[in-house]
Length: 119
Image (cartoon, rainbow, N blue to C red; front, side, top):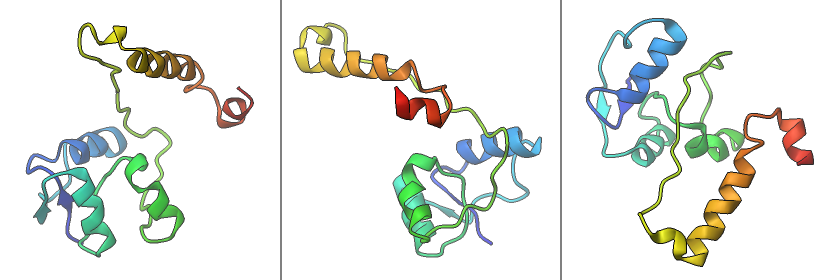
């Protein structure tokens, strides 16, 4: 089955292979390279092959049965995210409100799902 990636060097695919399978990368390179992760998901829904994509981009398609999860590792790769803003933009009340809401919500992100529902 062809591998679909958004870059020839397959950063997300390589990270997944290294973490889950203990190998640097899959045995073949991408058969199809597209400009971004949204295009990877679009190609997958059209049957172009397989790939590694963030759950946030495909959860609705998985739930609808338009994509199928091929692997469910106990310890998948960690994707570190950074909350950033332009210097000085905190004085904007909308930016401050989003910042404060994200910081408050982030306190329970590592909690089990049943605890998050009650938070």
